[in-house]
Length: 139
Image (cartoon, rainbow, N blue to C red):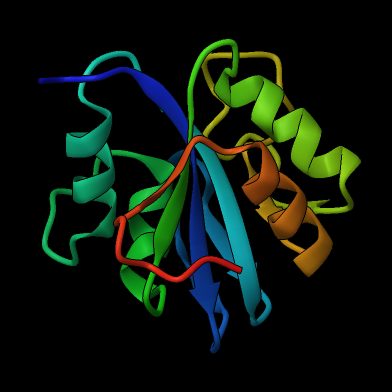
């Protein structure tokens, strides 16, 4: 069964990131834990499995960064959440927006990528409907 939903991809980058990200050009991120908000109108499990794979075609902004992440995982969200609402809530909880235009070329959000705080991660975990993969230990 293919189910819809939104997600926050949790991307621990212990060494940071520096590289070209499509039309955004060369981008640099300091070491830390990053959160990317996204959605899958059908096939949430398949989308998250793809994001967590190391071997994939580079299709979205987040693909380059996810290759460098150490043990990435995700929080799942059901309706009425949207990826834009998740971005707003992350920022309200203290996450820092990074790389303008990242993952937000089809909406009016400033970005869908954030440097996370433990408070923001805990706050969003409390709002989530699940963890992916389900055997991951949450914050």
